[in-house]
Length: 313
Image (cartoon, rainbow, N blue to C red; front, side, top):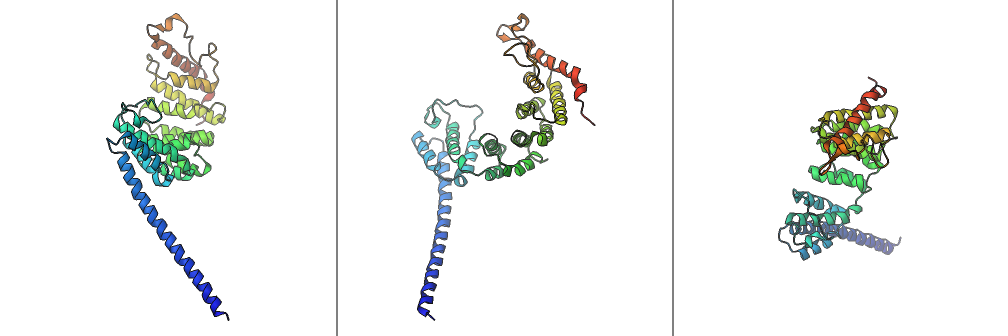
């Protein structure tokens, strides 16, 4: 028996074990320090009066961290510092602009960090983040799924959970349903969208959310869902039409595009009257009667064709 050799191997394994423990402890300490450091850096970023040059340095420093370390902090900071109006920046670094309000400088800082670290996240983690937080924060995570390429099949169960959640805020439900309608199978999720839209109390807002979600569905729905879409769309149009101001103008045109209504002339939209006619000309543009006539034309079409699209009970 080679006791010397056995002892040597034992020493090697012992050394490797101790080294692994030291590395694990060092990593844990580093993560703790990094977390504390990130928190302090964001506190400084969110402090009114921080100079533009320092803000610039903070954006660069925080953008070097991983998404898991700074992503949620960036989103929280953006949402906590939104003003009632939007400052239109003149440069790519609004925090260096003297006229930019202080809170918006903070929001722009955090937005720059979010824009740089967002693509380091994985889709499922992004979707999971949309389950919690303020409405603003959840909307930002959902926005990444909708607009920034984070939607995948792995995110679908989470979106389904939100879109069908009875206790979820109405706007959040609609946003999740919108993503499913636009990114997955619209036939599978149209009814989910309609049910979530019904939770929005303001009829005009409800119609806008429905219009936004369904604007490119022409030719993509089954016969049954085409009927459901048109019945709900014209129900909303009837609900918001006050008979004089043209409320529902955009919804009327979108319904016409879905149906395939031919415009009165090239360059016009479905259901629009000829805007060149004198009766629609006002002192400062088109009269309300032009927009109202668009709604009237859409509703007239529905009255004449509703029976063709009657849903089975």
